[in-house]
Length: 252
Image 1: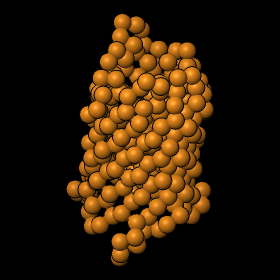
Image 2: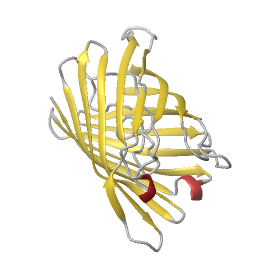
Image 3: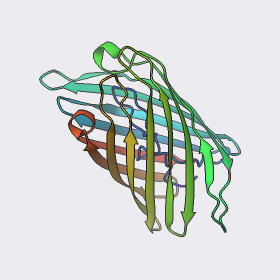
Image 4: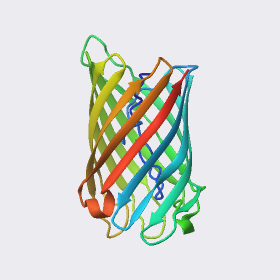
């Protein structure tokens, strides 16, 4: 797999924040269909956070592990330490919701033509965080996405989306979609930007649209730094006034 595993996730990455939303393809919320190569590992130590009006929440630290279990098949785990800081109160820390997933690529990319690679990446969010302290959702959640990717020279573009099954009092199921364009600027530096949209996940809640700009720097063949930052451009005060992701990645 490339050094920039797309992703959010989000991720979407997605983010693993106090709402339990998933990290997508680090360092972005949008994911890609490309699994880790068979017999290989990706291990991330990461932090992510989001600020909305009256609250800041996120993960510090978090652990993500991806393993290529078979050709075109990746197993996925995220285990976060979550935090939540409502305005005027002390920061709360503790275990966050655990994420499990399986990525399967069922269409391979045609390197000489226009056929993209296509895959699915269903995710299960387990309610291991304390919902009463703002560190989890208190319910299991499921994300059912389809992701598409095509590379041409130094350019890679990927995206797609899917449906979140989001049980719980006041919650509602919702859609997430995103698209990213990335360029390999040098042999060890890739820069990308994504645009994403999510429908409201609570009764009376707001839809959100936002963006992230990020980069992946390959320190060596096996050691990588990933960063991104962005914000909402629709209902930002309630959904995303500012967010970031930073990680160290080990591949082997």
